[in-house]
Image 1 (cartoon, rainbow, N blue to C red):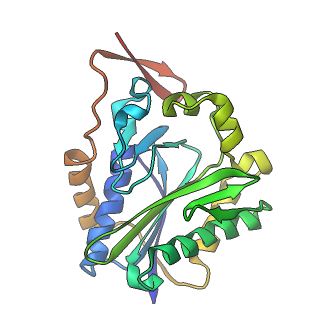
Image 2 (cartoon, rainbow, N blue to C red; image 1 turned 60 degrees about the vertical axis):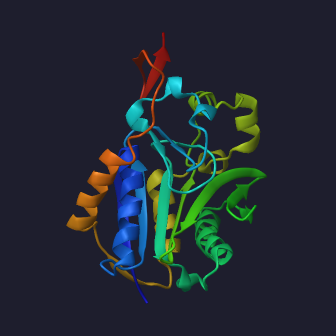
Length: 251
């Protein structure tokens, strides 16, 4: 079986989620090969689970374009610009029609990359990858009625221990005790970490390196505008610059 690989590109939060859905549509109609995609976030961002109450996060600290609701479940994830995000979009039959098996196989690619970087990790709770007893990678998935399976996840490169806990409404102590990153274990460049991830995701596969098609990109732009820009921020929010992030404070 042939796979398509799309290397790292950078988009805003709405566009990143819209592209994943656009690829799902393209794979469903056999216009694209089963796809492995890596991507970055234009700004530090937050994605909220499909059924999560948006008030569980601190919306006062999020610029509108940096908050997006995923089509997959789970809880809010803080996406640092330095972290790695991946998606795998395939017919579920590739994984024996088993979501559990799909999680296991795809997460094994992340575990393999960490192993190559000298970091021991393991899969817990079906979709969490743990290193040193802390979560270093989380995954979320959706199986569509048409049999197309989407799994996307994040591997934490470094943790902004000041901003991330504040946005997610968790204490700094809780964050330190429960969230791991590559840099906590090894002094490894982003380039080296990405190459390890890429090598493990494409290993033993018939890979065709491509970019998004024009049709996928156009559909994603439509989805980003009509579907993924739906998070409402507190009224009278004032934007203040905070380094690489945008901080909003309500009156």
